[in-house]
Image (cartoon, rainbow, N blue to C red; front, side, top):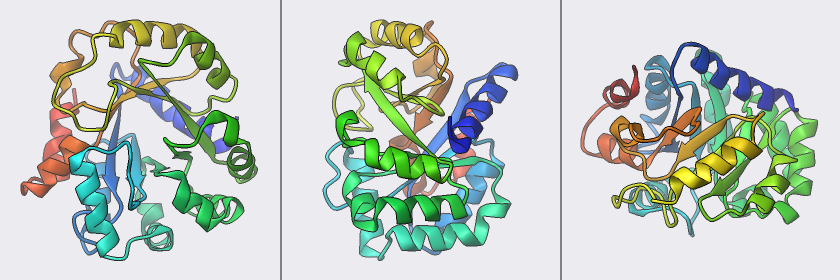
Amino acid sequence: MAEGGERLRQRIERAAAQGRRALIPFLPAGFPHTETFWDHVRELDQSGADIIEIGVPFSDPVADGQAVEEASQQSLAQGVDLDWIFSGLAGIREEIGAELVLMGYVNPFLQYGWDNLARKMAECRVSGLIAPDLPLEESAGLERALGASGASLIRLVGVNTSPERMRLYAEHAEGFVYFVSVLGTTGGNGGLSPELAHGLRQAGEIFAATPLALGFGLSRPQQLEGITQRVDAVVFGSALIRHIRDGGSPGEFMARWRP
């Protein structure tokens, strides 16, 4: 396992040793304003985030719901790109105790170049990368580049992923596996999928050695009360974006999720 993946796994296991699920907030880079974004990252870190996902804005976010899409468009309008992200990270990385992950669509990463991306991630100690639209069969080049620089490619599975497909992902799983809780885009208000329990049960068996992070559609900790299957970490983005857009602070939002 790459060094970054090991750091991610250890961070989630540390939360488990404390009797809780790891907290993974997501924010699009530059949201709501480039002048305040890094202050929000600091506040998320100081408020108990174990891992922080930084979204790389893209013009055609096919898996994003309205909140994330609007935030990403706002960031693009401010000129946010990978160079802006890495420049900002270089200035604050030593202040941040949480592990960092980039999440975005494959096009910006491809345009940046696999090797260049991996090198900059290593310089900024970014432990992992999530690319929801990159199929397993086309991920070898990126996986090699990241691994050579010490970072891990985080895999996504969901309620519609067959056991056979999960086993293929398990051969490449590092850091944690992102389990998509619903069919559709992020930030929906329709509740968690009725197929979720079955999917999590399968994933828990197949990814026995890799932590599971549950994301998409999570807005409040009460949603997890009926889940008895293994969930090692929770990811929340759309609800956090709406909270900040309505004038709330990242710390206030994180307080809802802390035990």
